[in-house]
Image (cartoon, rainbow, N blue to C red; front, side, top):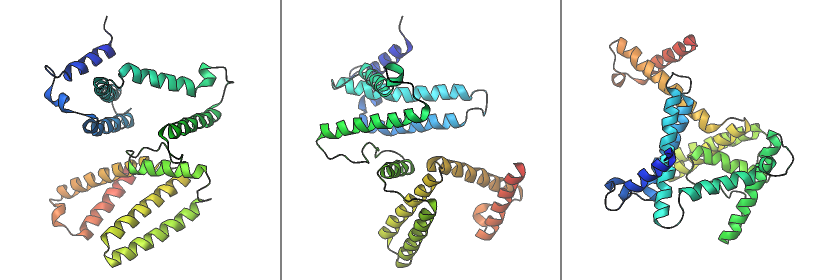
Length: 273
C-alpha cells in the first residue's frame, strides 16, 4: 500500500519528468523555488496565529503545512536529479541530527531540564558550526550559522544574540535607548543634508538599534511588528468605514481631518476592549 508521502514523492517526480511532466515545474530550479519556500513558511506562521479563530483553523494549518512540505519535496527532487541527495537522505539527515542533539533521550546522558537542554543544544550547534568552518577552510566566527535569507528583523536579533554570547552587548536597556537617540540625531543630520545614501545607512542603524532594545526588553521584534501591522490594519479599516458612513473619501481630506478620524478609530478599539 502506497503511503501518503510516497504518493507525494511520486507526484513530484512526474511533475518534473522531462517528457511528460508540467512545463512550469520542469522550468524551476533552487533559486526560483526559494521565494515560494519562504512564502509558504510565513503562511504556516499565519495559520498558527489564526488558531482558535474558527472551527476550520486547524484544517487550514494542516493544508499550509502540506504546502510547506511540498517545498521540501520539490527541493529534494531537484537535488536527486543532480545525483546529490534525495528526500530519504533529507529525512535521514534530520533524524541523525535530532538524535545527536538529544543524547539525554536517545543516549546515556543524564536527564536534563528545559534550561539545561537549551544550553546543551546550543553547545552542540556550536560544535557543528566549528566542524563546518573547518570543512570549508575558513575562520570561525561567533556569527556563523545566521542565515542571510532570514527576515531582516529576525536576522538582526540573531546576530545580536550571537555577539552578546562573547560579551559584545550593552549591560542595560537604558544604554540602548541612548544609542537610539544618537541614531535619530544622525539620521536627522543626513535628512537636513538631503544625502539619500547616508539616510538609508542611518535608517538601517536606527532599525538595528530598535531591535536591540526589543531584545533587552525580552520582546520578539518580528512578532511585535506583526502585531503593530495588525493593529494599524484594524484601525485603518475602521477609519475607512467611519468616513464612508459620513460620505467622505480619505483621499479628499487633509491630514488634520484624517488624524481626527484615526483618533476615533483608536478610541473605538479601546472601547471595544
